[in-house]
Image (cartoon, rainbow, N blue to C red; front, side, top):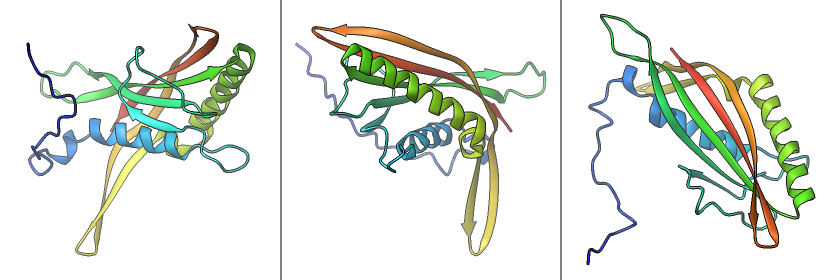
Length: 177
């Protein structure tokens, strides 16, 4: 029998060893999580009860009357260049899960998708990521994402006994600086 510790804390720090031009994955996933955590409704209430890193179809659950959201990176794309091996795009996913009465959950999933499409088209903070850092009163900026495109939006109905869940999945492509 093997004991597996499920709540592992990793004890390494490589932030200083990683050059700024290679720091993109952690910045993008934190940015996506922040954007989803700050989405609010007409009453200035947050939309999602919780935003997580990663996605597991078997364990995703809704909490109360708010949907849950998961964000994760699926792949990193590279341009063909003989002299460089730097990433050019990042594909990420935003998965939201709404549970409840089928008509209500599906209608709200569509309403949420409309709103999120609007944010990615109208809100520069959802399309572009530039980090600023001030050290000794000197501010430097690092461009991470120069543009974001929605590549796909999908809905999936997930029956769960007498209740239903609706999964709304966004596939995004981030073009890197």
